Length: 299
Ligand SMILES: Cc1ncc(COP(=O)(O)O)c(C=O)c1O
Image (cartoon, rainbow, N blue to C red; front, side, top):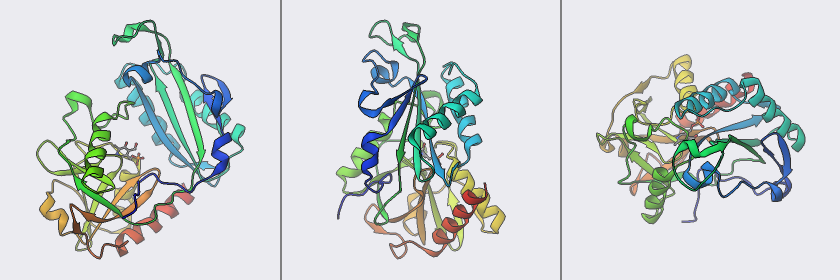
């Protein structure tokens, strides 16, 4: 089976010449470099946020900016500007690139350049480093995704809280590598109790007898798309449960899908070699996709 990732987009040659925001400047991609002493490069010390542009509007902008400031506060990182400043930087990058729709922005803020190559945050004296990469991006995920469960867990909040969009994604990357080595596209990660939690890059849902189940939310990214799907189910009368469930419940689901800002709702065809439902995009996932598309257009 051909390799597929959950963040696959149509090839767009315009992305070779995009402009990147760096600390107030807008620079051509080839000139957009960070120092080897940058806290993000050296230690994964930073936070990020991913947003999508649809028809001239950044979807759920307030929620994304809230989460960015919440994450920065959690790691005691001063972004050095207020919400309007961050939104201004986003819009300036959009304007410079002349993008109007189907674009994806990754905002990255690190603790900045360190004096010496060691861990202590006090060594980061020139900071923060604030970068926005904005690409032309039309998701193109050619078939439903296959998942494999992996030994890597979504841990307890007191180690590295899985709610934090930290620059260091090593736990998730190791999970993804393990899944790929098992022949799947992405990893299905369990929580510390063995309940099904999330994938390495997206939130995870199953459909059983017309109801939607997702994890309690205790050990996964507080995904904005995840919350929108839950809200849409409630508004549309689709039973939805945030609950603990195991692989036994999961393998026998009628449908399974992933959520994330990039791919919206991505169907899952198999988990650990067990086909889920028909193995194709199912009717409830189709309905939720339509409801979500409508919500984006209205919001
Ligand atoms: C681990 C993980 N899960 C889920 C998500 C999806 O979150 P959202 O729907 O806010 O894009 C992300 C994206 O940041 C993520 O990194």
